[in-house]
Image (cartoon, rainbow, N blue to C red; front, side, top):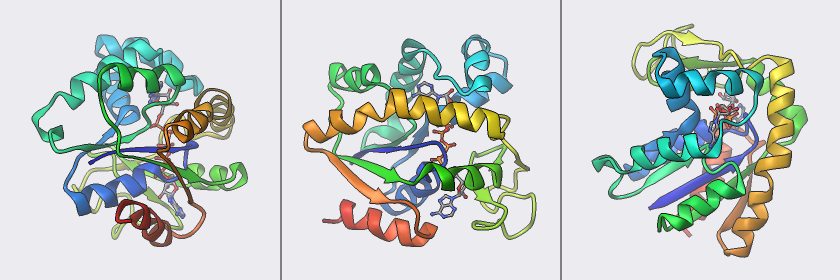
Amino acid sequence: MKIILLGAPGAGKGTQAEKISKKFGIPTISTGFIIRNAIANETEVGKVAKGYIDKGQLVPDEVVTNILMERISNEDCKDGFILDGYPRTIAQGESLDDNNIKIDYVIDLVVPDEVILGRLTGRRECSKCGRTYHIVDNKPSVEGICDACGGELICRKDDNPETIKNRLEVYHSQTEPLEKFYTDKGLLCKVIGQDSVDGTYAEVLKVLEA
Ligand code: AP5
């Protein structure tokens, strides 16, 4: 099963991806997490990406597409995967088609911009495995420590109000056109992402198990 999760920054893509991954036994591929690791490890890709990610801009299509194609060629993706954060432009959507990657579901998590700010400023991310938490709505069992791997929870550098505003603008101008792209292919399923994490997941499951 190959799934794309679309949605604005902070719509809950990573949170829902984790649950879907557990249930269906397929890996989540977060291009954002891969890029942040590349930056932390000061790789060539990380050096190119840093200037973009810090400003809330998209990393160039070619760079991200190369990262994605390499990742999905791994053995653990042979039965499917969940794409969290890719595609983000029409060109990226076309790259999936050009590489004969047949997507089964595109789930678009719909959350209004007003809700996003509170979600992202309260988010904490595991520095080791990337699992996300929220200081009010989705707390870890022990403050500051990841339930899954024991890693330290950190505040993402791009989760500050000014960068969030840029990320939302970029989302509306460059990523939202993918809604029509996938509607035209008969693949888009909108899910209201404003409910609780579990309430949203119940709606996601309705799509995947229909
Ligand atoms: P990326 O890491 O993909 O960030 P994003 O799309 O901005 O998405 P987020 O991770 O911020 O949000 P999310 O939807 O996963 O929400 P989450 O589940 O964490 O990308 C970062 C950067 O990398 C980009 O800006 C770009 O520069 C670059 N990049 C990445 N991919 C790229 C690509 N393909 N092309 C070009 N550049 C690329 O939830 C958010 C918070 O809300 C959490 O605290 C969570 O606990 C909480 N929450 C979630 N659901 C609920 C709920 N239902 N109720 C209450 N709280 C909730």
